[in-house]
Length: 277
Ligand SMILES: [Zn+2]
Image 1: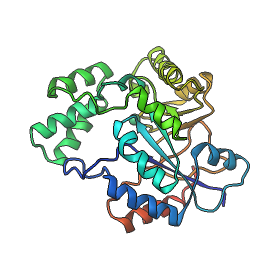
Image 2: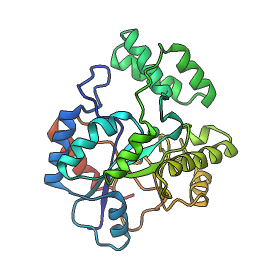
Image 3: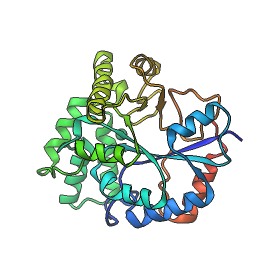
């Protein structure tokens, strides 16, 4: 059974947040990693991908990834990963490093101030998600109270992750839905995201994660071709399922283990094993 489960995280909070119930806090993340280690062979993503190609994956192989570049990844997730001796790959949208904030966090800040329920927040995010890129940014910013400048990583935190042995991947510069912007803009954004991060870590990037990540909705084959032309070896969607030796290396599946309680988290992980993509 040569299959790889690739997990996506976004944030690890210091304390649970009632407005964002799907995000793990440090304790829940710690429990999830304990469980993962007990039931899976967790490998660094690049090691797992080499073994996948050579059909040498251990049984129940898994790898951990983080998207977007939140500061809490370096502040809170990294120490937990290190305590467990585990490795993760961090896909970072480079425009928001050093004091930026993504549009969805503008909307979340508004929801917190307006005391919206989690469901109302989700509806608002869904309404705005597929608006044209600039329009979406403007609408979110118009709603939002003044920003915290420390939500996303600094360049120094990216370097800290690398020094700790973690891997960095590209995730575009401004995190547009690629299918929703002109092709020239999509290409420029993917290229810029790669260059900015390579300048920070002084190493060529080989891995890319498509923003939002649904094929046919968020990106198309022409974007896969752009990713190849820009020199990436591996790219990741958000299609649920496990990778196998026949998977498209530029559209590898990943999924979010969001179940808040432990048995369901495990069941969800194991259920994904049946679907090879
Ligand atoms: Zn993202």
